[in-house]
Amino acid sequence: MKTYLFYDSPEYDDTFSKKIINVIKKIACTSDTENLIIAVYILNSCHYSFGTTYTKQFTPDKFATGRGKWKFSKKWNTPEDLPENFCLIRICLGQKILFPVKEKDKYGWELTFGSIYDKLAFIFAHELHHYRRYHLSMHPGQGEQSANKWALERSSECDFNVKGKKIPVKRIHRKKNKLLFDPFKKFRSLNQGDRVLIITDPKNRYKNEIAEVVKPIRKNSKRIVIKTPDKKIWRWPMNWLKPL
Image 1 (cartoon, rainbow, N blue to C red):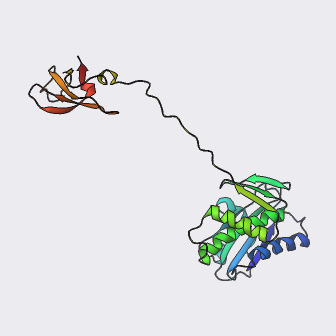
Image 2: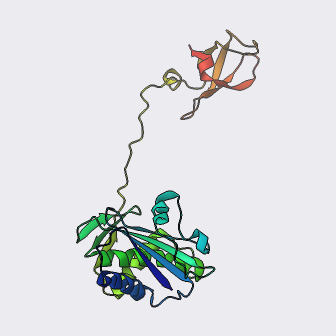
């Protein structure tokens, strides 16, 4: 495993860099990371921190990208000592934030971090979970929720000040829409033997004929069973009939 740090400001000293490296090593020490490269971008003007794990292996010419949310990675030269093929985790550490901090992530978790190192520990552990799943065949079938849970556990094991919980989703109980207008209200009181006038018949067989109701209509039905003068039984659309 190799870790590369990229700064957009020269104000950081070697002590800060060593602490960043130590966080990465501490979280990763129980995982096989021989083929893993970690690129950490420390951005002084950024409010956000995030990470990405790539499921496919990289080559040095793909180390940085000029597209998407990582397009800023093109600002720095690609390291010359990268292996021919490697797995990659990118992490952005936004420095324009005060700690301790409480945040809500896009997966529905409320998270509290004591320092920038604690936040780095959690982000890297989350991404490491994905790496372990896709490249080490661990955590089969587990996704973002499981990655958060494992990241919390791993961060705590390593004595980082990270707390978090899944926020319960409030279910909205929607009342069923009441039927404000019932176009077939007059038909609902009809019983067997009542009469209706056929006002529409596309084939002009029974138009203006009187038919007999065979049985009351069913709930939500748009048709009613009738018997025409020739004793035939039909399920006739009610909007083609008129109650008598």
